[in-house]
Amino acid sequence: MAAFAQEMELLSRQLSQAHRAAIQAELLAAGLEEVNHPMLVSLLQCAEEDPAYPCQAQRDLAQQLHVSPAAVANALKGLERSGCIRREPWQDDARRNRVLLTEKGRAAVAGCREAFRRVSRTMLTGFSPEEQALLLAFERRMLQNLTRNTNNQKED
Image 1 (spheres, one colour):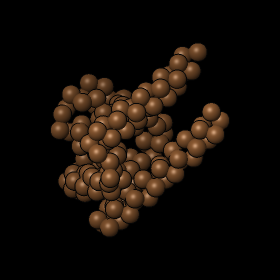
Image 2 (spheres, helix red, strand yellow):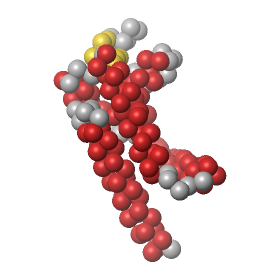
Image 3 (cartoon, rainbow, N blue to C red):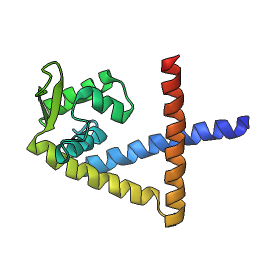
Image 4 (cartoon, rainbow, N blue to C red):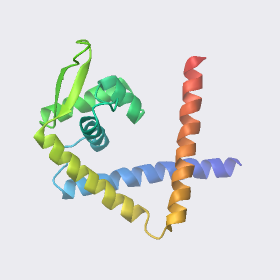
């Protein structure tokens, strides 16, 4: 079991690094290298398309991305400097900021989503639809296992 665990850890890291490198290469090729956190930009687009979607506030974005609020704050600073987002006080609570895309940000979202699609197509080459469905189910279960364990540890 120890060898399996080691190989899983190594493969997880290698896959994550290769995926990140592929996304960055696609963004660079598309002229979107200034988008320092493309998933964040895509989440913001979701929030604008569906105002009921709970990810317009910084703390909600951190929860959706499974990162710290500080990491989101840093990413938002870069996106704000590049002109992709703007912040405004929340209507019902001035202590919270809503994060909104600018026109430049909306254009970046379209480019990011296309980059994600290209990388996914490449990554899943040779997988049948059934294998893709199984892979997705396994990854969801692993994420659920990890986040459930993290949430249980926080409660202790």
